[in-house]
Image: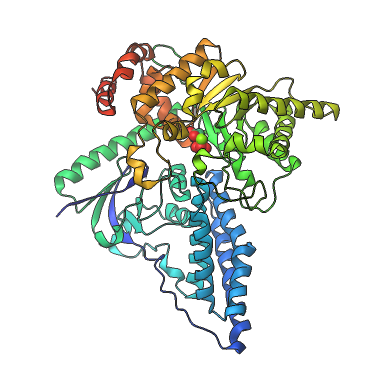
Length: 583
Ligand code: PEP
Ligand code: MG
């Protein structure tokens, strides 16, 4: 009998295949106390497992296909760094020596301690670092327990089913395993845990692998060898589909595949609508190496470079020179403009690197985040501003300030940037004659006062991920209220429209760099609202370009008011369906 299961679709596409469950994460961990004379041998056993885990990861890293997104190597590097991180490894050795725990028990205890610390963190990205701790610990534990074959899967290529597509069903999948899974040509994967912002989800999107996360009990509900249909667009898994469902989804899949193949031809084509409106498609990047990949996929520049990654996985802050090198490398590798966002860390995010210490605030999403933190810690900001200004000598660099909520904040930040410029000039450093400074619109207050901000900011970029969370008063990292996270809420649309119109009236460019900009479900709507600069994950660029090329922007804009007047997202979707090419 067919069975529908629902999770969170994080990487689009339809896959049809047979289930192969992985049990790698559910390790039985023995716990016992060692006799004193065995303690040092146990330390050696742990060190040996740590070394073997590193060798495994280095081998995986060496297998990364050419042209794969830079994120992949970076994720593996993070795990390699973690295997050398003293908070993990020295603490394990300490537990073996001081408590006489066996190595597995010591790894498990230290893993649980670190996971508990990460779980306290408010910031979604940092909170997900607990996944890294779990993945790295699981790798070491599998080695200690001699269960290295548990994951990733072997297709057993001599079996009858070898040529049949496989859908991996696991509790969680590590980024390193995703590379192997990708090379084995799996059809899709479904995990019980993880959210749309997890590394696993980001990698699946980068690699174009159909994926669903957060499908609780998937391994209990699905059986090895049974056929399933995975719909990554909707987050659905259909187990044991009947013939009707199979042929419906096969047709849908065939349509998607031919659509995707056709997209390659759009790479060098400009993003111009049917009625001649030029739209700019830019990339969101996290690491300096991503810029080249983005250009290959047709990005005309970088609309958002998130600099937080430079500050992570380390105990000290990056120096001005280190930041300068990183920014200069990206700026030089991008042909078009590149917008670099200044540090967007929350109050509790960077204790390790010493940016700020102190008690965790009770409501960090509303606390000392992003520009607020930078203004509170001007030396932190000054170092970054100097590095950015120096990098401006190498290309078309723009500086963007996150989480601006009033003009005062913008002016203070601008004053710090201006004084950094004076210092650098006095030192005789090269810089661009002018570096535009703009504001992210992520707080409803900023959207509502965009005309006032436009007196100071030279450009705007709408960060819908945060704008939606603050407009609808829902924590974007809280599963319990995730159902309220609605990009089509009329209040969100009005703020977006207000920002675009206000920017235009003031002669300021308005881009969008939140996830909404790279989501094909919203492209026509955003065109109707007057958006002309879209910045997104590089993998989405060609698909968004296709929609733009097929759209009549004038006709869409003529319906903008009706869209803004739609009382809920259902009514709006109906309106938008008028513009679907097949309708
Ligand atoms: C946003 O809030 O939409 C955004 C792009 O910033 P981040 O996702 O990094 O908070
Ligand atoms: Mg944001």
